[in-house]
Picture 1 (tube, rainbow, N blue to C red):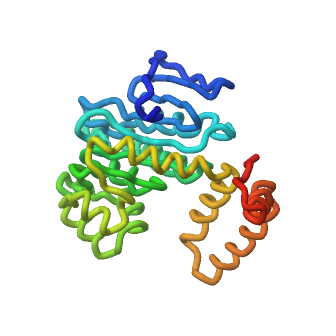
Picture 2 (tube, rainbow, N blue to C red):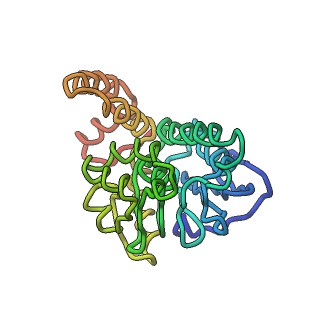
Picture 3 (cartoon, rainbow, N blue to C red):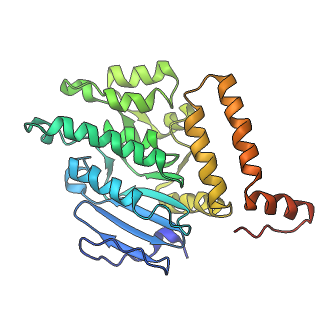
Length: 278
């Protein structure tokens, strides 16, 4: 059965990931369900266009980080209710005394939670992802979106340049195009996002869950400890010069060879059988 079509049993303000590997939970602004190694987090405030308010950011960090050392957890999918994936920060909240610093600091914490999670985080986008919502997308490990999705950083239109979203964008997109998005605020289409490397896959709206599940299934066929090692290395080396990155890569691969799963993978290849991961 499609893991993203599982029914969600709502437990008010609860988080319960038991030994069964099946969990369902809910709080004010996000819904979370975990089954068969996949944790699905849904932005659930469509009336406010899933704005990344302080509470929404706090909820997302909790949802991503909770029990992330559980060996049964293999990947996390972030989706959204309504026609907007996320419109970015709640501008009304930014008008409240003392809130801007807290919101921006927590937003950086959210991006760190995505980066530091030991499992890949997939964003399934079906609609507009703007400003900090676009930042959330750019910070994800893999992004799948529908044809109707759009991506923008329009903060300058409101007198607030998308500086922190720009941190993520310039690390994913070609510099000239990231500049264009940030300075003009104009949105790009799903196909443009695919061509530029902001998303990995574009599909019809009816096929979004199916495409995400294909990626999830491929990830689950790999040993978790090896995937976690690879994610950590990729995030470390991206800021290094190429020589330093290769040196670190050599060490990481040598360390990887010491893993029991690496030994099993090599032996199973030689014996022409499927590996039995630990």
